[in-house]
Length: 309
Image (cartoon, rainbow, N blue to C red; front, top):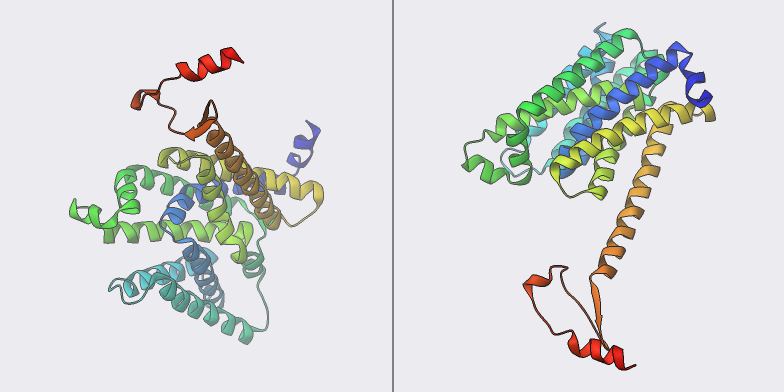
């Protein structure tokens, strides 16, 4: 028990742990839709755009979250607008918009000749520097995201798997896409101080992909993804403390390790199921579903042969 209680005696660790758990759950929830929609590159791109906005906000003395949020939302709206006519694919739009905003931030930094601590934290992550104000913002974003996604569960589910059919049934997929883009942007911004710009994509994708290895049901995938996100965040914090390694990097590496275990577990499970589906009848080996009511065959001959041996 000392393993758990020792680091909890420090306030900075408690703040970091709460932030890691909240962001892990948030990224796990949003990440399911990111993965199933094939938007894994979006999270990475939006983090770069948000960083550019944070730099511009620093120059004009805006709050970090205001600058990052405004530019991240602008980038999300521009990406959505460029991909409307289907002539520009989403990956191209993301690459153009987000890298342009990020480059603008880099240009501004080069003129300033110094890097503010909050910007350095956004770039590389600084979970141990989380303040009470940061926790309040992270908690609000997590609560709002959970509430909105709960209310729009069915439309989001429908649009995720079949957008054209959702439009036919009267779902306003355009507004839904903008809503999800806003939630994703907010999630990326609050996660920047935890794992940094360079590892945002991993924080969004790994919990969802790990859950995907464990189940094929959407509802269970969401639940597993949130739980895995919380586990990765909390476990990574404790490991970073005892191994004295950067917290953001440790969280991501711990998530990668859990993902590898999930892939191995799925592979073993599929092997076991495949072997269970094989039946031996005398010298004949064939496979069929476990349900014997869907077909019939006579086992008496093979049983008699076994008895005569």
